Amino acid sequence: MAFYILNDTELYLRQKQTITLLRVVFAITFLLSFADGIGQQQQTYLFSYLGIRRGLAADEVRAVQQDAKGYIWIGTENGLQRFDGRRFITFYHNSSNKFSIPADEVNNLQIDSENKLWMICTGNKV
Image (cartoon, one colour):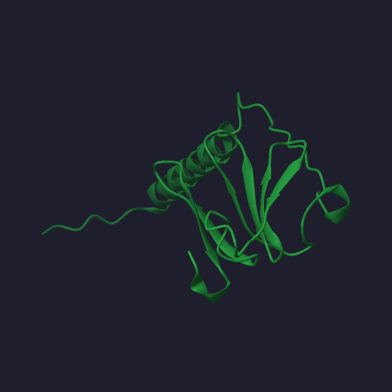
């Protein structure tokens, strides 16, 4: 195995090449970090506060889901609500109606692959 000893000029040139290469890599990385946003439009979102004054059944919302038709389903401590973008329809528990929701306190909502709404109410009633 042979060793080659660099003189000062060769060592200086190799260090300069290494530094130049690192600068180029850094510059490319820096420029590519901004390329992700090129050509994309900034998205704007519209937020509205929906509270009791606007028809929400309770201040405490425990679950929210959106179905395939675009309805927003909201589970509160005071019933289940469907919001269509303008108004709320509220569903309450009614012990004399077997088709009503199991309890007024809705703790969790899920929509399955068949677009069916599932809820878990107080006492783990489904």
